[in-house]
Length: 67
Image (tube, rainbow, N blue to C red; front, side):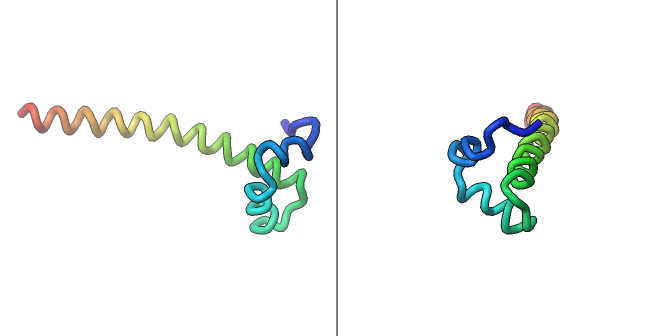
């Protein structure tokens, strides 16, 4: 779902940040905002996976140091 007013979103996020999406993907503003939001969703999913990895790593370190 895209924001109702793309220009306000562009001002809030910053033109420079969205321009990296626009230039890399040769996208217009609407597509760039969609890509930005898609990237945020992927990052959110990766954060969960990284937290599981971090817990497993911490537990392994604790187990080895306790032995």
